Image (cartoon, rainbow, N blue to C red; front, top):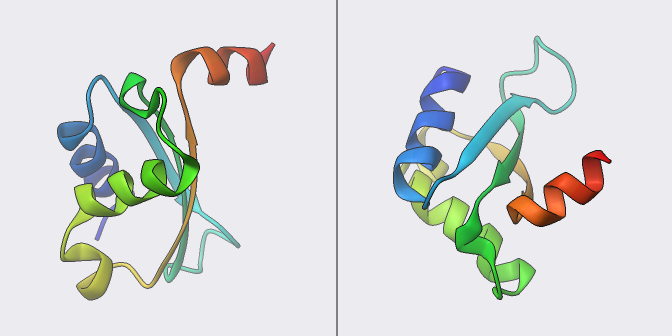
Length: 84
């Protein structure tokens, strides 16, 4: 599964999401991915529920196409503060 396909699935399911998916370890390790997802949908949600929303967006792909996914989630405000 292409990284851009994973980004598209996340962005299609979460409100105004911006997803960036990369190889977590090295560009040749297709089994371990990392996703950074920014969405206002994460407002007032505990971290566990934020991550669950990302996994839910990926549905069956989490068991068929994606071996491991490291998830970082932020509201737009949190992400702006992090980048400042």
